[in-house]
Image (cartoon, rainbow, N blue to C red; front, side, top):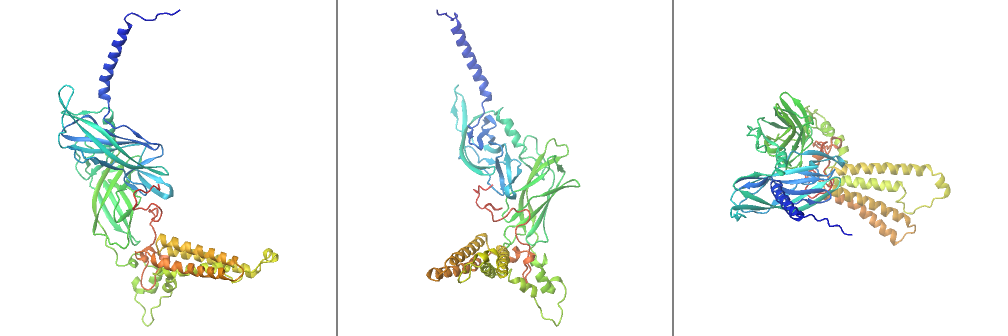
Length: 542
């Protein structure tokens, strides 16, 4: 039995309802439709290009943004990425009628990375604001009602890196069509998001504030004072930045710098002073052999600041010229070494005793360990390594077979020889450390490999009991391995003056004072895969 469920007139009523819903949906969707490119999604991030206007004016400013959503634990980078990574690079396709867009940078955060490294950037979500100007009316197109409308096709190539422990690069083309009209109409979805991140762009320090609504161009009337002074350690400086009229926000204030061609700027320390904040930053010359100019420009961004009467934390940014202190005549004027001051009385201001010849026993004693020619240190390391092998019985012409009694109770002479071998090994390690202050990391690695090869050849030679061609060839190989370290040390010596890299404990005699060597306390290191200068911006070692 079939029951007829049709109701007269239901088809007509259903059709009218569908038309009404469609018309309502179209009417409601138009104001809510965001002008944005589709999301590009990968396991680490999502990215899209957005506009703040449903309809942009034909003449005037156009506000855009590159919108990122990052997976938990991942971060993207500021204009100075820190010790790892690189900043996003946005390349725009030329569009007639559009001036070159300008990428702006919100206030960054500091991330602690494994190995004592630091990175500057953003986590969770970030919008990099983009400021552009429509300079010429776009080509008009015929509208549906015979009116005039225009649009701009905006295409941006975004090359960026995201990091957690590992780093993953991505590169995408993002495109959107920006409608143009006689009257601007803001986008209710993207305009509040852009406004929020536009307020994160630091204000210019030291100028009069401009009207509200233009935070990227406004400024705080606080004149920053920056000085650069020398310290006791040669090649090291101390930068001081004083900001008046501001205090630290509850989360704390921080200071970031753009990359500088000649200086490495470390982590700042901040303290409150009368009427403001004082940032103190350790600085070090990147190249001790290159002279610094009389003045240099340093670009900085201070975050986590509060102003009297201000509702929210703010950030300030500026680029200032600062005078560079003149280099001292010699390193001994800043930190005289023990050996040099004892050998040269005039270095300490005391007159030299008359009737006595100038003797430099301490300088000569240490000159062998810290010679200006690193080949001497490498040769000493080879000699210490050979003594180690001899003490362990690997250089005897004829290996003697040990009996069971010898194995159970080794003779005192054998034990003394083995102990001497361990002492020689410690001396070898100390000489390698001294050599690391004289030659490049690549040269030091080659010296260490040559010493390891020498040990392996000595072990193989000892395994062959009968004299013959094999033992002769291995003896020649052993001699070659002993020659290689001094040769490598001579070819890979550091270009800078070794006295600027050597500590006071390895002081030079002969009238030269040594400086404080090695990286300063704020530098994570200059020899790992990521250097502070990051010559390869595609370094993925976070």
